[in-house]
Amino acid sequence: GDSVTQMEGPVTLSEEAFLTINCTYTATGYPSLFWYVQYPGEGLQLLLKATKADDKGSNKGFEATYRKETTSFHLEKGSVQVSDSAVYFCALSDRRRGNQFYFGTGTSLTVIP
Amino acid sequence: DVKVTQSSRYLVKRTGEKVFLECVQDMDHENMFWYRQDPGLGLRLIYFSYDVKMKEKGDIPEGYSVSREKKERFSLILESASTNQTSMYLCASSSPGRGTNYGYTFGSGTRLTVV
Image 1 (spheres, each protein chain N blue to C red):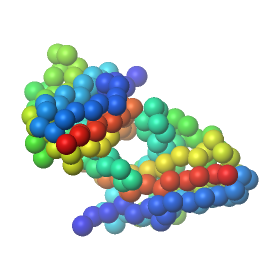
Image 2: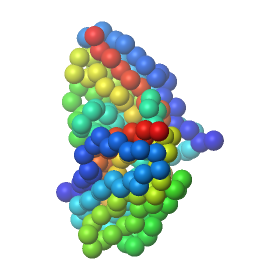
Image 3: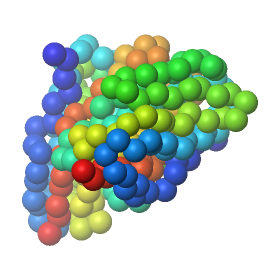
């Protein structure tokens, strides 16, 4: 069945460091891929998305490229800030499975000044 | 600003109580979902609904039920609360078809503690 695997956390980085959070997926169809962010005490917010192979989603300095050949959607940011401290979730939605979403387990990021 | 609103941010209930968690969305979305979020387990789907009076079981429906009498409202019911239902509960909504491309909109969550 469909599933998402993302790197274990927690991740701790210094301000202005480069961030990569790995995400790989398994899907029988042609999924859309998403990254969600959850700030402390809040619900999940959509960070970025890509709906087909080779698409690049971007928002707030974060980027992720839909790689069908490696079934990956890694999240990257060139220079993290303290305000980026949050939990990040990779997710997929498979049109062939009624658009149901499948979420990774989340990766906690802490950025220290 | 479009929203999914969950009625309570924090709840404390006693074991055996019947608990209602309410979720309202103002986006005219057909699809609504209830998840619970636990450390190390991520988000797990409890129930979802694609239409009024329609419901489908998710991955962990045991101990829960739902009600969808109006399009904008989706209620999660804990028939007899137990301590293992202490968790963060997240409601989400989406539009069919568009959901695949536009994702879910989440509420802020309800942190339920059962004592």
